[in-house]
Length: 181
Image (cartoon, rainbow, N blue to C red; front, top):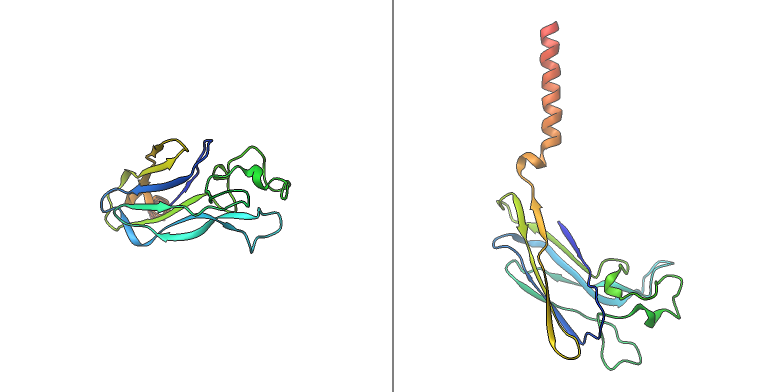
């Protein structure tokens, strides 16, 4: 499964981290990763922006985890940031970057956060909720924003419904053929 994460808002974010809490015994360690952080798009194709998300790939923790983000630093800034007005780059790349946008609201080659995960064998079918808490300093105080997306784990019947329908149709036609012969 894959979840893409975006962050919207406005203000000066000086530090941030993302806490992730999956349901108990939900994730398979092998094959569960986060792609995040900003980097320069050195191998970019024509028409792509000069910066991109996905500069860092981290192994996802099966119980809980914390991500910190690497940002970029403009020559006029005292520190790097993950949350940047796109206008900083507008003069050089006006054709490929929309104005009045914070970069974490858009794709730069990919989403700001891509969470790819594999569920463990034996996870119960149905809705499961993941917890995400973004903690950040807004220049005056620490704040937290919570999101709890749900993912659906399909049952064996749901995963194999097409094949079961095809097999059922073939058996029905074969049965009808036997009746008329």
